[in-house]
Length: 312
Image (cartoon, helix red, strand yellow):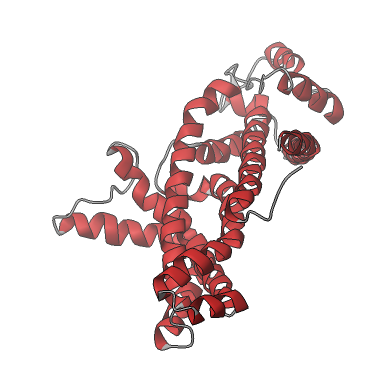
């Protein structure tokens, strides 16, 4: 097990380098000058602008700039912005907001997706099964941006007018309740995909020979489904949930903008607009690390769900 974890960590290094190189190249190719953006409407003195470009290596070739970033990254330094702020300090508080939002969405996704998928699989071929499939198709076809504004209106504004102030419309002033509505929006499409995946996996598992044998022995239906069928059907679901956690972290840009949440998604949108290369690459670096660690945890859970899987 120890050798497996070390091997996975070593494999993560080229992934991290490739992701940072790609995003650094994209940000480098963006038009505009971050020094001019920093000055705003006022004209900056030429010697001040030249000093800033020299200090932050903005006049150096692309590979030289990327090398300066990598040397700082391997020392635990995500760099500084043109305005002089530390990228690590900027992302510290915001990362927690995005992580809370992603965890809220993941819990909603797991509960709703597995529950609806189980409900549909146990009623395979009936009207309830078709209704669940149709609902997930509608949910997949609606963009999260539209879903966010609709739920803000229906669950945030209209319910409050009716005397039920359950879902804050924006911000985190209401504490953990501020994550419920954006978490539901962020998890919407994933709930639909997980529902379909759960249904398909469970339907195939229920047709297996060992399930027929367990049923023929007279075991209760609940035990056959819960202990034998669902446990084996969970393996592809765990894989999807682990990979989707990284997707939820990276896909929070629209949700955090709509609900005015101070997370790294909102910061990423602002940094791209201001062409702040260190912040953009720093956000991507954190997301890649989260994605790699989430997949590693998923691989380790395989041995728990299926004793036949062992790591050497």
